[in-house]
Image (cartoon, rainbow, N blue to C red; front, side, top):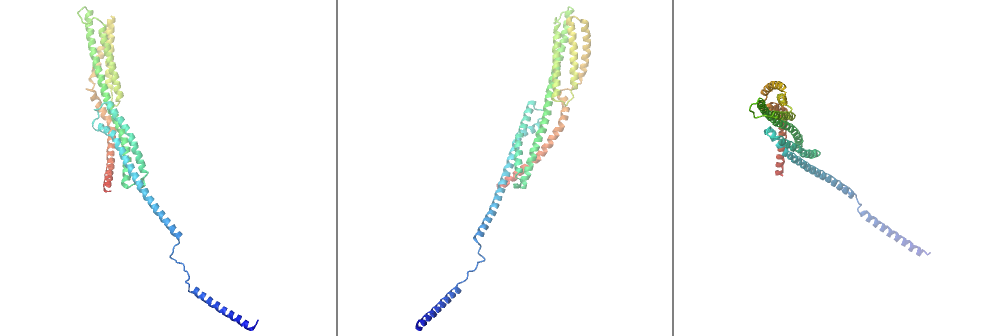
Length: 362
């Protein structure tokens, strides 16, 4: 290679080297002038934003659910309270007649009427069962109720229990009242039969006297010995029925002492039997036995007359003292329960007034 050629190559390399250095310097300058990216500390990654949004939604959703749950529970509690009040009111349809009878009509209604009132009162227990169910439902919603609502639920619970006790006490009062009413009617019938027996005895004695005339050959309206015996039998039937009525009266109202009646009726029956024996003896021609029976009859008749003097003026007079004594305890119990119930029901009415007021404000 010639020296000239070597110089050209060297010159070219030198020029290339200079160009390369210049380009490199230019690139370095360019790079050095480009701003270096920096991390923005205030910029939040998207995933964190989404997570925070979800948490916020969950919190809002939970709060909304709690509010919805409370409002729903409060509404349900109010519904149960209203239903309980309605059921209690339904029971009063049967309780009111019971109360009216006890407070003003004792002794004036028949046994059948009293039985219907008691049966109606018993049927009201289904309404009270419904009321108790609604009260139980309301109690299960206690967390959603106001203090006023809790108070009225307690009052309703008390009211149901007091109404049940009132019905029970009222039934006892009416049972005594009905028993005394029946006893009075039965004793009245017993004494009517006793009077009828006395009437037949008088007829028997008159017929026996007339028959005695016929035996003596005197003019007489009775010539048949069976006539006085027939009156004796009628008297015996009457006095036996009287005893049956008196016994039924004891069963209807056992609180009274009926011995004054039982002794009298037994004495009358014994006297009638002796008279019947006398008349039968006359009919058979056994006059000695007849005379002895007549003497015995007169003694028994006198004894029964003394017992008759001890009889009360009327069955009503006889029963009044025992009736009042028998009624005292159950009637006092009934009145105590009724007073407590009135106070309880006032709490319920007060709540209803508050509820109506709140409704109007809303």
